[in-house]
Amino acid sequence: MQDETMEVRSERNAGARRRTVDVIIPTYKPDKKFSRLLRMLELQTYPIRRIIVMNTEKSYWNDKGYEGIKGLEVHHLTKAEFDHGRTRNQGARYSRADIMVFMTDDAVPADNRLIEQLMAAFDQRGPLGESVIMAYARQLADKDCGLAERYTRSFNYPDQSRVKTRADLKELGIKTFFASNVCCAYDREKFWFQGGFTDKTIFNEDMIFAGRAVLEDDYAVAYVAGARVVHSHNYGCMAQFHRNFDLAVSQADHPELFSAVRSESEGIRLVKQTARYLVKQRRPWLVPGLFVKSGFKYLGYRVGKCYRLMPRALVLRCTMNKEYWSRV
Image 1 (tube, rainbow, N blue to C red):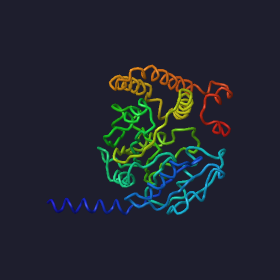
Image 2 (spheres, rainbow, N blue to C red):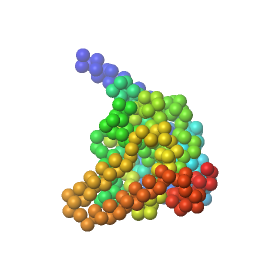
Image 3 (cartoon, helix red, strand yellow):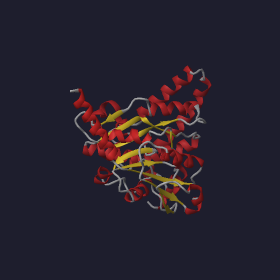
Image 4 (spheres, rainbow, N blue to C red):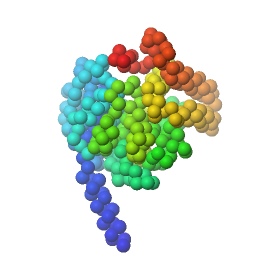
């Protein structure tokens, strides 16, 4: 019996190895982090067929800086042409791999098993047999990350993996279809069966896709804690306001997904737990700053929800992505 189990396991592993992988990365003014990302992709235990780069503004791309990177393929577009959903769809059309891994240009693999770990997630199933359509990685704080943001990373990306399905809505709420294209793998065939990413979106194309896959077609979304990338930001108050404004715009544009689940309660829980963490770490003087920054986040979110009632000039002052509004 044990030999049979080992044989089945071996067959599954062999099946996983037969899947092909492309990595798709939108870039804008790529820097040293992007160079480290490419070097780490070359060291992966799981082979990558191609690295497809969708670069915004050719003038910011240095061909000589990336010579010798195996399988690198670069496509240029202008800033006016960039869209979070459409640009990634364009990159996906260049791929013929079984699995596509979308990354951002500032997400550096923490080790050489990132792709291997993501691939293994597609052998998993939900409690009712739901197949995994996408699998996203854990994000670790960079060394320059502030203490509060470091805790936020551990809150949103815990050390425990999970396969999420429609059955988790009552427990997880909006977190049921939380996912991040900072590093997220997709089954290419299922991706296109779902229609790909929404072609015009200011932000949040990953969660919009996940929401449709879970709520409309009963797929599963896998969070893979063993697949790790180093990625964090130290946003100021106004940057948080702009970012959350755009987040709320994306949710307001898709009420069929977001109207039934509230995200404010999750935000409040995060603030409370972060404050407790700061006190526990004997840094209570950081708590007022946390509350101020959280207030800017919430204000941006509430204003973004009402963006249709606002004059265009005010919208442009609130958004992080001004080019998007020239196309709307």
